[in-house]
Image (cartoon, rainbow, N blue to C red; front, side, top):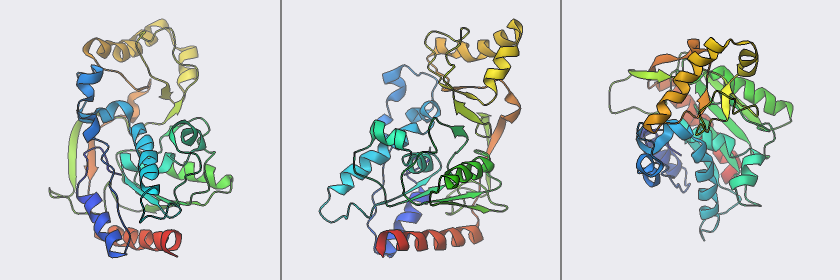
Length: 295
């Protein structure tokens, strides 16, 4: 499962790796079917495929669709299907193991046999997200990732392991986002962006919406600590925050989440290949899939 930009060198790298092991591969294209999402949903200012609006949640449903499709293929063993995802695709591979989401969008009786989220965001705490299937999960991430705080994945893994689940995380020191394949452009590639809130921490918030939110605001996720801030904030402070949140709605935009503390927002993103980390991740993933899918 691919990241925000679509199928690219990272997906091609893993396809060749797995085919070399004798494994069949199936690449899920989560962008093409949503190419008209801005027009269809009147999200005029959204980026292509509206990934900035759904924040990868659609990848979860796409993962279930792929599992159901492949389980019916005559040459595929439905009990030996694994999932690997990069960036937003990793969000799909990680959270499709949550029983709540599986009940909402999955197929009863079908589980992945293995899951490998590569540098996927873990910075949103969803309701019941520590109630997962028995699918073994191996997360890989660099400690210099600017797309989200790697510590959020460490914390999530600790919560899952406390429930007795087979979940492990490998944190690579001195390594950035998308580290396992050489990009066709320069590396490292630090891109200036208008806003990157990936390093903020969020949670699914049952207290939303609040009175100051626009009627068409669909946000159900807030920055952690929002309820405490809201309870003590002055009218002036609330007006300032919700003016920024509500204004874009006039131009066909929706904020999927609410933040009140912008100190975690940065204006750049870095992608960089790392040869040593790439070789180690490849070895570990190959061993993991050999043990879970082949043996």
